[in-house]
Image 1 (cartoon, rainbow, N blue to C red):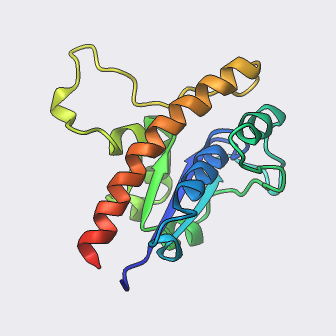
Image 2: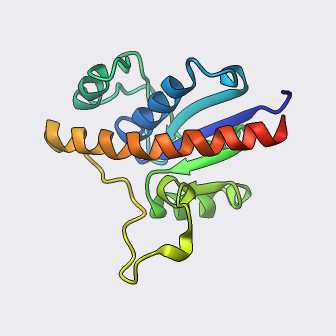
Image 3: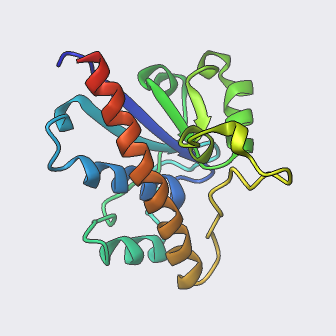
Length: 169
């Protein structure tokens, strides 16, 4: 079981969506035999250094027994991009910005909802959104809805990562 996997979640400010995704995935791996092989971090495309997670994000994760109160935001930089084996962004536009700023991320950067698609060919004609909705500035319910959406996505992501680790072990 030598194969390690570094996963980086990226959103805009690294105070809502990407830290929620990071900690939801970490929680999934807590009791997993592969836990030590998977490193998870998050960062923001236009994040400030060391800002706290938003109060609502802290609250909705607290209900899921996840502590977000020591989170500090981190801006994306070349070092993090290099560190990551897989970069999962919260929206398609985050992915496009990332790849234009860091061409080396091309091929390992995906929108989270794009990456967990079972079959991209099954897309409805009008195309459902590949974006995790941004709760920033919204009320508690918006954050609740965002956390639910992330939880479902992370559930599928977890299974995919396990399969990959299993294959390469």
